[in-house]
Image (cartoon, rainbow, N blue to C red; front, side):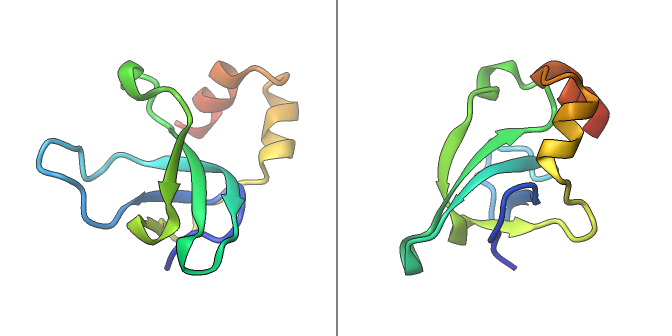
Length: 91
């Protein structure tokens, strides 16, 4: 299932050879545009420091990891609006 809302945990359904197929991302924003819908995602694993930026990816390239979604606003409150604290809550 493609992502359709903020807070969903996703992964690439067909990762490239050099990508970690287990790498999970959180959807920070879903941009509806029909067949060209996009998501802004960020890796959950902070150790992947080169990829810590938020990336704009086509929704059709991602799949939702079932039973792993969050209310971002609520989790950010718990982490005092600090992204590092937020990511540590997800790990």
